[in-house]
Image 1 (cartoon, one colour):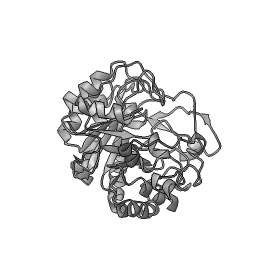
Image 2 (cartoon, one colour; image 1 turned 60 degrees about the horizontal axis):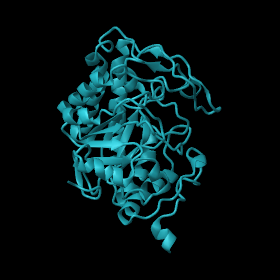
Image 3 (cartoon, rainbow, N blue to C red; image 1 turned 180 degrees about the vertical axis):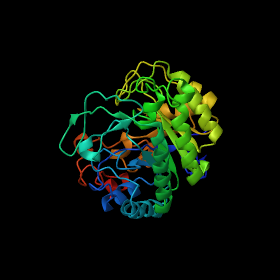
Image 4 (cartoon, rainbow, N blue to C red; image 1 turned 135 degrees about the vertical axis):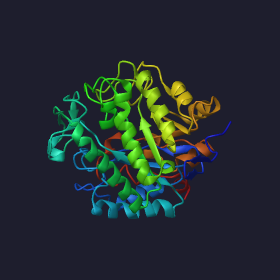
Length: 361
């Protein structure tokens, strides 16, 4: 069986190892969602990853409600991404853009408009805004006549990602955001062609992926799903009935790889007692399968050995350890994570974590 340190082909992308960098929102772009010079340093420092999946990146103003997250719908945003990607490539890395529509997980004070979703529902709790945390607003249900413009937004963001130099794109269909709100019956109460049966609820995922792949090529298109347990108030009464067919549909589309974020009962970033679906999805999806959440190298290698996964995406360990692959290779200790600087806007806790090389100098 392969090791975490062996290369893997992810569609058109040759990854030199199977330690991927998961998408991580960090809030270092401008208020206009334009990437900054600091972001070039951050991503280039982490170019040793087999593949970097960028932080979630908005496809439209409507769909991007996280303060200071980047976008891909304006020329200025594209221009801001160019030096970031150039820096990653100069450091020998590979990076794909994760395309994000947050659906109901936005606030009108950020987007300038009422949230949209599969149905007229609201998320529980509060949401980050420029004015601090505020209660979620009730979304309006997207009209069926609006779906084409959503697909157009994904296509534009994909074209912009390629123009900026990204090596591919990932459709963010997980974590309780727009596509996930269509997939799961806890949020999708529609009675039209996008609601009701699992096949109808999969429809938006299929159409978005088809549209994105028509621009980027299926071999440069990947998808992220979160099939088990509640995420930001989005859940399903029978997840296997929707996510296994969804995986089969993605297999038929020939996407480069499928990434799953799966919660466990002792999860440190969301937890669930709902059984993981990766074994069933493994049978339905024949391409490279990437698993994510709460992995260490031993657990990741064990899942590669069992044939459950082809690669592992690591998230928070990459925040504090830009040289994570080297540390795992050498069995070196990891830097501790400073949670206070996750979204703090400055370089502290972003580009100043030491590498092994710097510590030895």
